[in-house]
Image 1 (cartoon, rainbow, N blue to C red):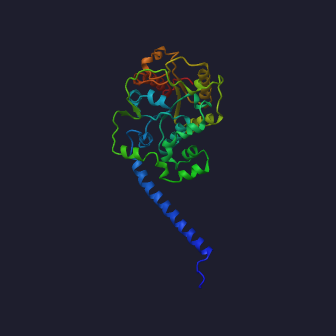
Image 2: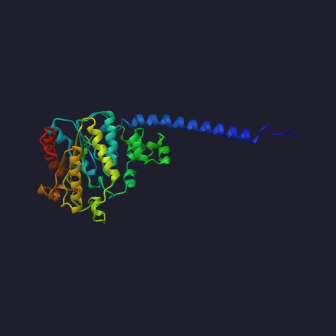
Image 3: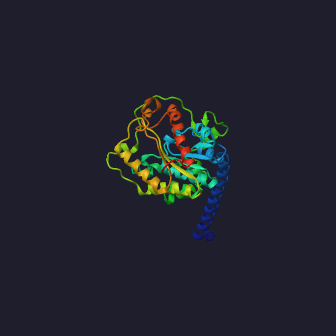
Length: 325
């Protein structure tokens, strides 16, 4: 009986060759389809689960306001533009905090140089009131921009398996394909450069600052977050952009813990040379009116219309050199 011409080593070689061919084909499909999806994604600017980042990055704006849902609800671009004579974009995002703002700022600075960057501060931007892992986990909307090293670094937290996932262009869009298809033909609608007109909403005593939910009465600062905040300020200042830190009103008086953190921000403003516009209800009692709020720390549209002119007047003083640090 003739011996088989196939040896174990030759079978392994053929298997490895086929596996390599399959992986190369898979990589080619991933890259090709990923490029096609990326092309259409960059053109989706509006709609539900909207690609707000694309809108911000699609053209240069003179003033960009960064921050959380408080930024999103409190700063009305149309009012600011009429007063300043500059184009304004509200880049605030629901559920996003400092790391998101820093990553988005880096994407902006890669494309254009605004004249002014405003960062509305939350107390937990510099404290351990919420885990960094949870905060970073909410940043998946930035996955399509993972080619930027800062974005990739924040999304992966240096973990090898996460870095490997983001090498796939299709993986970057795995949670956005349906919204991409739905949003492609959408027009701006009732949106004002990032601000959505939601009208007057009924006040509910919900959603205090995360630091006020922390049972520890002492402020516990987070050195890594403080470092990122300083990078946010410095990277803009290095491009001669006027950076302005801000804090907007709340429906109830601030706790001693929040007051202490605001004092920290005031010292940071002095250290970095970034003006700090702090508008608190204790100094402007009309902002204790609950009809201006949807909850304890978020104003509704009426509140935004009351706050924005006041903030813009202070911003104009900064730009004219009349606002003290």
